[in-house]
Image (cartoon, rainbow, N blue to C red; front, top):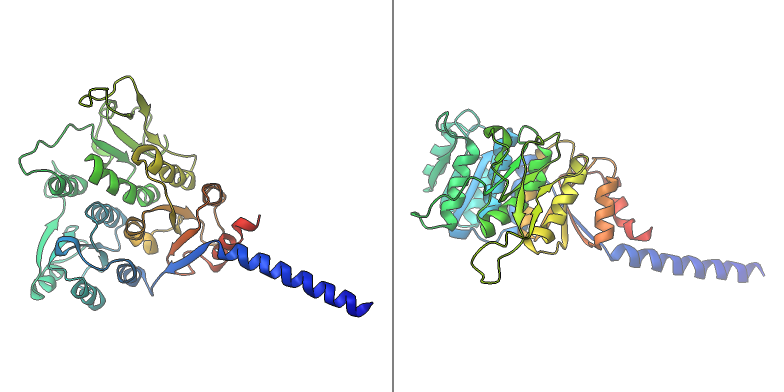
Length: 349
């Protein structure tokens, strides 16, 4: 009797283990990380970039999140390699990766306070051409300079800039909304010529009334800014369908929910199904700086989590959407092994 009971328990445990293995195998989890934010970005390029479009790359400061995330948005729009660098010189691993990708032109994003002239000199010594992108005067902003480059890339030189309504406004004084917006806005820039800017550069609540987006809730971008977007064209195919206009403020009750709503926005505004989620720390930004590159190269969206616990809104979106491919960007101090285990157990619940 004891022998039969033992055999029965063994069979049950074996069947149970098969079930667990099968469930775990249904979700693919990988991680891109490095010793620090700089190496993480290099490793992201190594894993997901096999060439540089137009032999072009973007490099920015790794210590100023606003500069870095606008630059990552720019790289995502252009679909080119993206690196973050210390203030002085250029890291050897970055130079080696640029050589592997056949980079010969570089946009250096940021003024000389965040990336000094030795960066330019090092790149030039390697035979690279470069263009420094930064706020040149009081009438300009960093994002305006970036947007001009993006716009000119996808439009003839003599084309009009377009009305100021072709914008997505964000709160760029904090990093979370910029993180999730960067790859989403990169695709909008390529497909709809809509560019990203901080709302504090504008004082009119009417500028986005007819065409544009707002990323973030009312605590991030004030309620006097309104956004709407025409959903299609009239029957003749030439004029916007003014009868079908939707509100296009994309937001949630917190940074995690806002990132989820941005992920949903790929389907709503770009008619694109998300198959991959790039998961990053929503509490701090260093390891997440290269997340936009990873998302863009994998047709994915960036979602946020706490470092030691999978955020419940993020988990719900992943499970409800049936997403089975997760790429974590950052080491275990940024996104813990515990979060990874929670992801593996999502479909067991």
